[in-house]
View 1 (cartoon, rainbow, N blue to C red):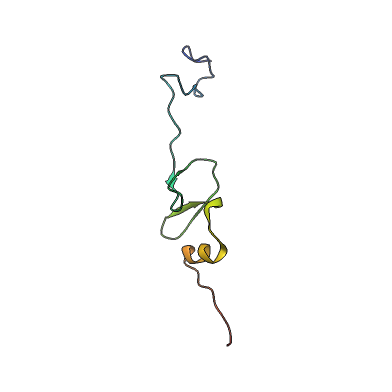
View 2 (cartoon, helix red, strand yellow; view 1 turned 120 degrees about the horizontal axis):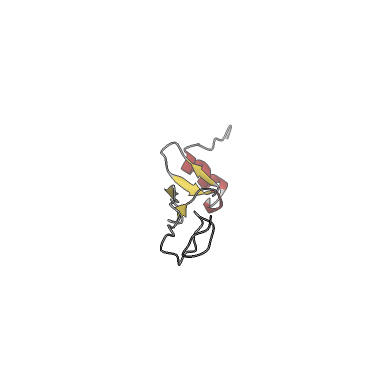
Length: 75
């Protein structure tokens, strides 16, 4: 079936169609502030905070954000 207004398949409406509903995000990225949508790659820490997989700044920052410490053995 196609939509009688926009002609797109039912459930996949053109953004200009009155039946169109924008996708809902599942979380907000703590780094960039943008929505994380279904199908996006993301990381979630133990506090329920999420970031896009590509928004991590560097490995040390990511480990700290995840709550893991960097250890040094010896002097």
